Image 1 (cartoon, helix red, strand yellow):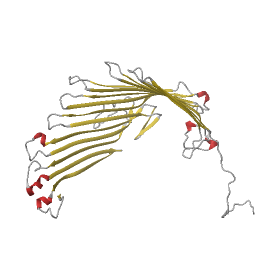
Image 2: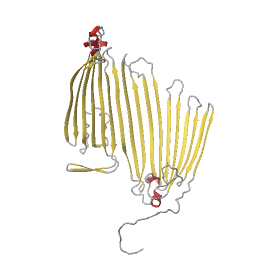
Image 3: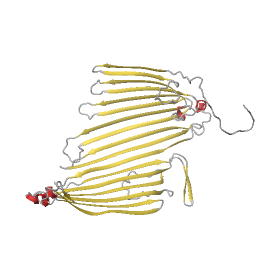
Length: 462
């Protein structure tokens, strides 16, 4: 073969290509499981599973990890007024350095090295005489990222109850549902093990969730169902490099208020209504520089927030003339359905931290924050009106002969009008869509009306 130090280009043809030996990997997998039951008292069990990084099957994902799992559970059916369930799991994964083994898109940065994860769950239902049943839940998670010198700790506690009332007092709810949960999530770095603790922060996040749903029946045929939920998150952040560099601020808030129901004021007049509004607040999580026009300002973590609001509501009324005039054979088949719907949404930026948006449930009124750098980023308001009518004028008559076909005559009409106003980056646009009333006549049994049964069957004219 001719050799040269200069680069060469061209084609190389191989007649035969042989592989000397296949690639071999020796993998290991273990599994042990047991389940037991004590009749009428408890059931329990556990499982152990280990798979090393070389164990592969034709369908398994190759993550290049040693994976060890231990799980267990215990279910207690006694005492009967407070049955409980418990579960526990421990997982240890060992991932080689990706710089030595090559990157793997199934493994993220935190999973490198040894990671130990522990999960625990507990739940129970407390049912005592004269008290509403209460559901209790706990979930805990501990994750230790050895290589990153980071420990995550998360605990969640929840309780809920629901009960009914037979009281005839109209201000007393017929049904009540209440729930509460508290979650604490801690991220803690060991600064002594970090090469450079600057830029790392220990965080302590606390979230409270509340919800309530009531059902009222102030008089016969009327139902009013209000509901409310609130989630509020606070966070404290401490620098891993400087214990005295700490900040505490609101992180986020989500609130939903809703009411729905119907008011049956007469047998033929039963309007239904609903309205819901959701408000979300998200505070800035880092130092931010805001520029508006020729002015600028610097805001520390948590001092400003983005407020997003969305709402929708409707009123619906269906009038059945058979309920209003049951003896009028000509009009009793007429049904008139009408509705109105509104849909609104807006986004406000750079709102001051202390501004209370929770009471601003009507979106067609601006927030008016005090921060001079706050502004409305976008807004959409939509109103939709619709109505439909259906009528069979001869449905109540007993015609004979050819005129019997008139009982199938149907008249329908539909109308829709939608108006939308949009504000985006200082530009206002208006859009109107309208479906003009369309009157449709439909009659069946045309062969009977025209006496052409010999030639036509199932004739329909529209």
